[in-house]
Length: 562
Image (cartoon, rainbow, N blue to C red; front, side, top):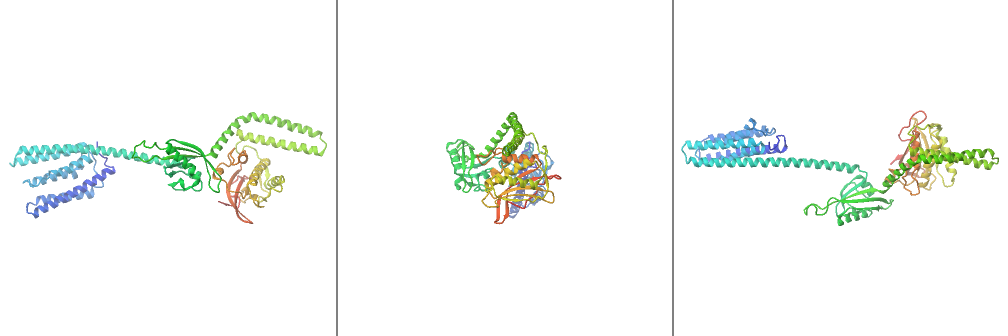
């Protein structure tokens, strides 16, 4: 098995390193030959020519062969490198017959090259070739009658044996390092993949996640956590929890986790100056117990999960809605039957009434009983999801007239307190919507705006508009304070409310009623140009489909969305 693959970057680096080493050896041999000639130790030019030829061969291979490393398996492609080295050393040793210079240590270069870059077969084959050349040299000296032949053969055998051991050990080390490098590279790739997946999960998980050390330095924080921490949270890590007083409950839980080496959980409130309190449920874990991975390891980190209590309550309310839907079928019959009896009894009673006051009271009973029937049916339709978008038949109504009538009826209940401006800009354009449903939507939106508006005459505005392209809409605007982001995300969800006395069904029913008639309702924070200047406020917009074409979602009103 080859120690390294030819296409591996490490193989290429080692290949270039060996080629550079061969060039340095060639330069050293050439300098030695020139020095020997300068000292008049020899007058033979053949060794000098061999050194020059070797320098030329190593230079050419370094220039033209460095970009294409050879296959690690044995073959003729190793001749320009290992083959040239073996021939060179044999020639130099043969040319120095006097034995004044011994070039046999140079056999270590091709043997190391074969053992590190090639297979075990190539390494042992190269070593065998070097050993045979050494034996040939010993035989050559013996044939020339020089010295003790037995001593030369013994020295050659010892040198060859050492070369075999070195080739085998170096190849095994190279194979092991290659395997460990491959394992390390795979582990690095797995770690990078895990890091990317963890970062992706942290970016998109709904709960906030913080990773901090014992000193309170936040090393990692996902967007949900930064949103829950409030306006003082930095968008980049690291930052310190101790820099903001509102985060002290989180720091106390983290310190308790480190001191007790156990997970902690608690419900805390984060209070920033000028903002409403943020209720959070905190859970903490340590990455590992202190000292569990050894004394030299880094200290454990605290992983903190932050949950918005209002979102948890919203999910609980949604579950309550599902439970209510399961029981609504039975309740419907219990409600419908008494209402039907009341309506019928009132009609029979009205036939015998003569006094105007009594007739007026009977008429009021009939109107409110009919309204209760409608409300009951609508709530049951929402709970049981019986009617999908567009399935309920709609009547055609004149938008401006209906809005004006609803506005005057709403104001009539409290003329002194319910002040505002009515701006009708839709002309005589008709829309497809049930008049009673539209009245309920507008009354709900006006009640919400009245609750949070300012004291000015233009603090509340109800306006209609129709564009030349066919876009038709109603907008209820008030100069109230901005909504918290956590509240804005759940505005139209059932049973979600920022007030404990509210049922949280109003805006949800508005959305359902709009969808049933093919309309859309939305919220945006916007500004309006009033007589007192530019004023920011909250706007709820209902976009209708007309009697001739569907609605479009572009902006209907001349407002600046911020």
